[in-house]
Image (cartoon, rainbow, N blue to C red; front, top):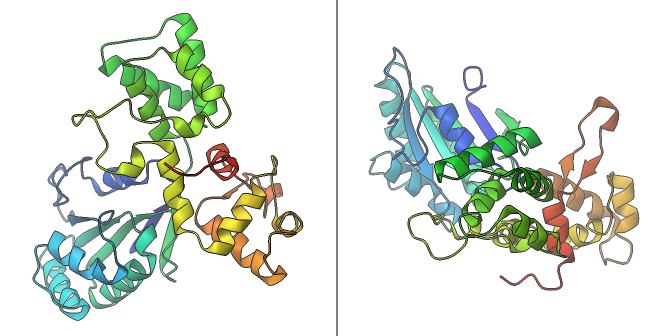
Length: 325
């Protein structure tokens, strides 16, 4: 997609592996500084600059974050565009700008990307976000959870890296755990860390309790293995981040749709929204917003156009007695 489009956005629910995929697509190893380290030397390979936006609090600060990541002194978006245009022109393969974690700054990222792409012919942008940036030139790459067997293979590999394996009963419990977390990669990593101290069977029992999946978290304060992002340290925090980014109307509809166990379309959403206080015209907007934010995922298949499902984790969050934590 990067070969044919100048703006690609990897979208999907939290914890699905958007940042890891972007790192692989850009050729940067996970945890690299964002300067293209790890790319094999090749003719006309683009220079890679990664901008980690999770710690940026305001959309207006996106240009400054880009400038800092690119080693530029720019006081405005115009100055940034001039500097990046020169930088891109100096590299035979141009410049690939990776904007990682855009969802809480979607407006600022959209404006910045639009101006930079217009002013910098040698620039391409790869973004990760729970919501698309909404630009005409954007090509979205929706990313879903792993297939169950792939998720199990990941769990086995992580346990092997810890010098451990599975007994036959343990492997059966691991399969149950994969189903319980719907093959979400972040959840698989959390489970593997917990297995350093707990058995798969015990974990499967814990997650089987009402709301138990939400309580899956890192085993404790271990700076060596803890995620640098607090919202990646527990599944409750992961979904709470999405909930906080939603509008009041989207939150109200989220809570209503969580009561339905099956797939929904707009007509079903309008019926379920009765009594929520949302006016009829607002239901469609909220429904589209939840779909854009990957709270509702499209059901696969040509015959299922317009049908969506809510991941079990998001449903559990909406139905939980308390969302604190």
